[in-house]
Amino acid sequence: MQDLEVIHHYLETQASKCFSLLYTRYAGKIYSKCISLLKDEAMAQDATQEIFTKIFLNLSRFSEKSRFSTWVYSITYNYCIDFIRRKKKQKNLFSDEIENAPDLADEIPDEALLQMEVRQLKKVLEEVADGDRAILLMKYQDDMSIKEIADILGKTESAIKMQLKRAKERAQRLRNQLFQENV
Image (cartoon, rainbow, N blue to C red; front, side):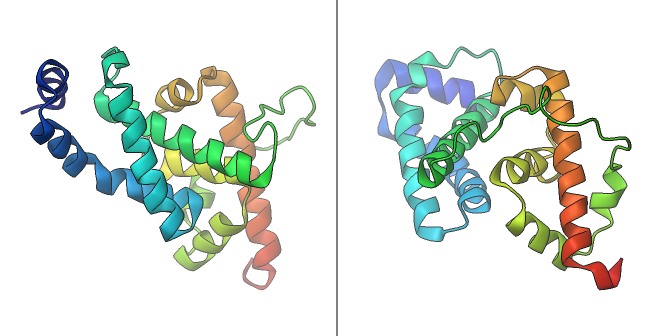
């Protein structure tokens, strides 16, 4: 059964096998996203359970305007980012910074990130700000389009392009600082 068939059947019958099927399909993916953002296995396991609770409590609100997997992905990212925000008591984790930031002359090409050694990339992703890590993972690990990221984060495509540009620049600067001897 396709996701939409399972969802419709679950909404009509409340059959636990439908719940189990969706859980089996998405639990691993949700856990992977949680662990990549939260960096803690226990928190990621708890978050996975909380996210599934949110999904099934709100399943009737799924409007089918996007794929179910995109909707689940959106809930997962938003939950994790909200958790990080609460934990660090930071406001505006994903602020656009467009009006207050100075113009940066050169854009860091995608190749610069893609050519980093795996060891360096892991270290940079551990050190970079949570918001930058999330958007970089969405774009390069999860291979999401600018439009998909914009939909998930509730921003315009141009704001996402600017945020991604700045995240790449900060990641490149951080790499240069951390690994000066190799640059």
